[in-house]
Image (cartoon, rainbow, N blue to C red; front, side, top):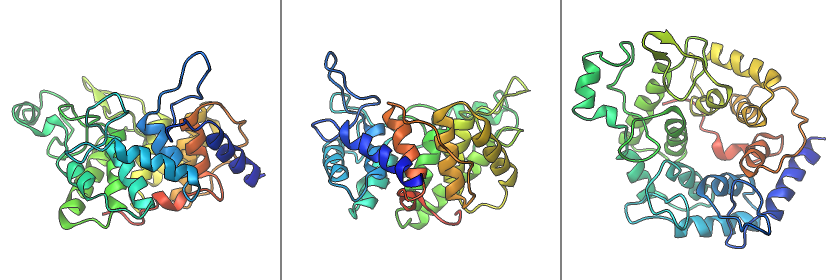
Amino acid sequence: MAESFLSARLDFLRRVQNPDGGWGYFPSKQSRPNQSWIEPTAWAALALHGDPASGRAWSLLKSWQRRDGSFKPSAEVDISNWATALCVNVSNAHGENPEKAIRWLLDAWGVENDFPLHTTAKLKIFDPERNFDLKAWPWKPGETSWVEPTAHSIVALKRSRPSQHARERIGTGEAQLIDVRCPDGGWNFGVPKVLGIDQPSYPETTGIALIALQGRTDIAHSLDLARKWAAETPSPMARAWLTLALRLHEIEPPDNNAPLKPDILITAIEALGAPGGNLSLLKTGASA
């Protein structure tokens, strides 16, 4: 059963790969040609690592690297963005040196760490409990930091034989994730309180945050919540992220017998978290 679950997903990814080597978020339709995007392409490349399809995907992604070391989100959109972290993971998986991309990640942080917003935050005009001294990562330069890009950047740096500077950024990134954890033990996009009112967490972002926090000893309650949600959530995306996170923490998740859905990102995450999947490409061991 586990083999058919995984093989069905890998076969689907191979079948719907675009001629340029990438993937969009959904399979192409004859009436609307599919555009390749960085996020589904990177995750599918990891899920299929060791297959020629992954090599074609990495060739495409490399053509999207910008002069500053970052990667653009598609052939047509020429901006730096958070998914550079995903390309670092793919580069490491293919045994190549992502040094320029790592330098870009190390120089990226949310604008809440810059003056004058940082000064305003220090006066406690925003969230009075949040520590704005902690540097984390934004979706793109010039924005505030959020849970998802921070989590993916942490994993990328941990997987890249980090320097002392990188270890420091990993440490502050992990601390920021803990700092924005919601009272129930999970995570939303990064705002645990609004006007003093506790905000709910979400299963998808909780799974993503936990992937970055491998090896920590202060997240037992969060892992319990992840296990509960993995058994109860009706969302295939949430279940995929939670299953992947639990396996990375060496916790057996509830059985996932969900049928294959024509969603490339979900399918790739499900394949990585399935028994026999390429889980090791995201394994980081202990925290910084």
